Length: 183
Image: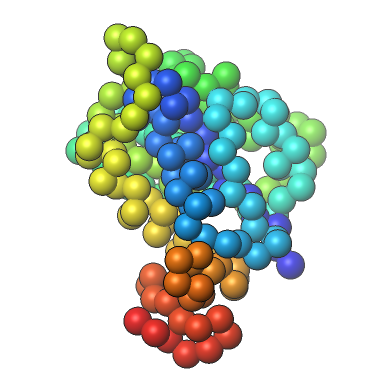
């Protein structure tokens, strides 16, 4: 069975930079995942993420993105190889995810990766600011649905919506666990 970790990265003290942890919190509150899937609020952990590369077959990385030219709240799905390595580190993270991935490769940990990003409005407030902008907050359901779709595409079964007790299936449909579709 494929081991999958959803790694949500971000700093909640820097406004929209906290989108990753906000997504982790909502996913953990709203869904039960099978034992081969974990959802982690990894904050700004840098090289502390290396064990995730060793222990998993697929990493789904959720983070804020900036400089896309798209409106704040736009949700992106992309490969880690699409991250531009030429930019200097200018985020609140200890390191860029691509740097951690390179370190993992040097240690012999090759793992498949998929990234989900949300275009931010503000990640550089004048003072610490907890809370997302309205446009980024409104993008959370789509970002969560994107992560759930990636899990389903990778053969994950048994994601249960806690409120209803129903299983999540393709297209966001819900069904009785092991049964027919509800709607």
